[in-house]
View 1: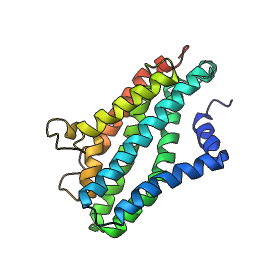
View 2: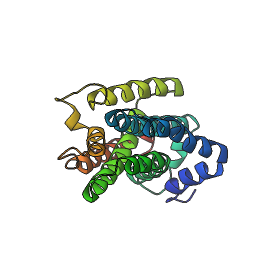
View 3: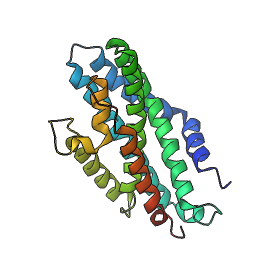
View 4: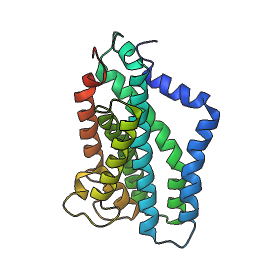
Length: 221
C-alpha cells in the first residue's frame, strides 16, 4: 500500500461497492425527503438531518475502524513510513467526504423548501461540514476501546444516543448543547442567531483529539 493511500483506499472501496454505495445514498434520502417535503415542523426536519449526520458519521467511522483492526489491516499499516496521525486524518476526512455526499441531497432539499438568507446558506454549509467531520472524529474516538465488532456497535449506539441528547436534539440541553458542533448545525438550519460561531472550532478540537490518540489505534504507531 502506498503511504498516502489510506484516504484513497477508503474512497475507492466505497466506489467499487456499487450496491452498498447506492444504499448509503438511498437510505438518507428515503428517510429524510418525505419528512422535509411534509408539513412536519421545521425543527423536526432540522433535527432529522442533524441526527442523520451524527448516526452516519459515528457508526460508519467507528465500525469500519474496528473491522480494520480485526482484519489486521491497522497492524500492517502501522509499519508504513508515515505517522499514525496522518493515516488517521486520511481515514476521518475520507469518511467525512462520503457522509457529506450522502446527506447533501436532503440538506439541499431542506434549503430549497426553507430558503434562508444568503448568509444563512453559508452558515448552514459550514456548520454541516463541521458536524460531519466532528461525527467521524467522534466515531474514531469510539473505536479506540472496543476489541470486537460487537463491542464497537454497542459503544457506537451509546455514543450516538448521548450525542443526540447532549446536543439538545430531543429536548433542550442548555448546559451541554453549546459544547457539541451538532447543535450548531441544528441551529443554523433554523436560522438561529449565532449558530455558526463555534462549530468549526469544536470540530477542529475533536479532530485534534483524534490525532492525539491515533497512536493507540496502531500497535506500532
